[in-house]
Amino acid sequence: MSEDLLIVGGKAFKSRLIVGTGKYASLEQNRDAIEASGAEMVTVAIRRFDLTDHGKGSLLDYISPEKYTFLPNTAGCYTAEEAIRTAELGREALSTDFVKLEVIGDQRTLFPDIVGLLEATKELVQEGFIVMPYTTDDPITAKKLEDLGAAAVMPLGAPIGSGLGIRNPYNIRIIMESIKIPVIVDAGVGTASDAAIAMELGCDAVLMNTGIAGAKDPIAMARAMKLAVEAGRLAYQAGRIPKKLYAQASSPIEGMIE
Image (tube, rainbow, N blue to C red; front, side, top):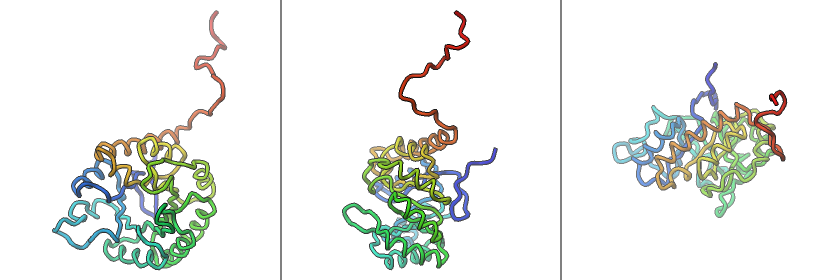
């Protein structure tokens, strides 16, 4: 039986959980949570960390790029130009072509600016980046991103940091039917059941930060998320029973001895 691997940008990952590196009480806690999660890909907000200051409490002193695939993100960027420039800085700092592309359109909701996102995706793909754009749950936008060369699409389940779970599972399903590249739910996951639902829908992976970092016990929550992603993926592969309005006996009456 072949391994069930997540393939993004030609690279294979055993874990389908991607985690972040912000909002933790300490870098030690961040490191321990990532280890508990089993994640192999870790996001880093380029604009919020000094990634070059080794030996002085830098993120890289706790989370090694030799052990994890770093996914620089362009969090906090509000224009395509700003996001492109930040992605280029991330490539130089971390020696990776991966980028989680964010072009924010509204400060209150943190919803993406789709026009800017499409523009930045096109430019970064041409520059050789492995682009993983954070987008809305709009199937049309997802298809446009695929056509531009995105390596995956990352539709939000709910607003960033909201913990509301997947608000529109039907759009997520349509996205999965519309494109061939990986679909990774990004934003809105608040607890393990949210992650399991995303995977049961058939999503290829889940990305989260606040759901773990903001928990009362981030280490325990990281492990819970790991198990939820694994259980959700296995349930999706197993194939759930169809939903029915009325009861159906577990033990059929036919063939029973009177």
